Image 1 (cartoon, rainbow, N blue to C red):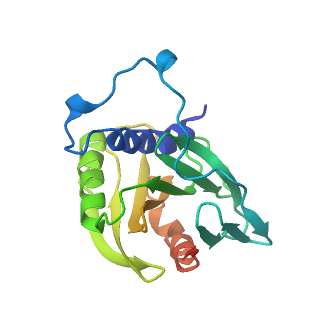
Image 2: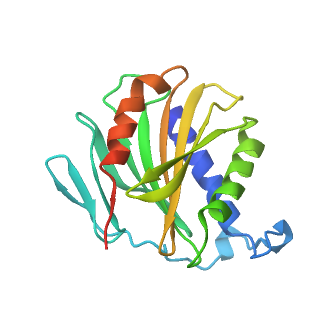
Length: 203
């Protein structure tokens, strides 16, 4: 596994672990059953198969569609946990350690969960895991309120810049993330902007 996979997966695994906590958020309530004895769990967001036509990536089972950036490749169902599913999109880059990528993480959440309630634990976890204080601002995705969190994890290598765009809808929490080599966030920002502008939540 090359390093850029780890850059992508570690935050996803950590956020999934947060979802395994009890409703009161008490770490003592996390199950500690050994993996060998754990009962297999079904992803709350179906795996399914996306429909890809030209550069349009439509995933009815997961509930969204988006336009694949020019020259980029897609990897549906790239990774999953008992609480989330991740689709990945990769830039045509020759970077040795960090291949620029955009991921779409879909997580099952309780109906009626407010954006603030979904986002704040994630921001605190980012601070704890990376040692970085995210810069946060508001935006919209498909007409829904969203938060953008930009940060550069202090520990490395590899050194990276990461942007998370977080929003919720109808029992699902979403995080669209851009990961680039350190210092290249601005280079890929227009691509992320176009990606988000093309993002549609399906009925």
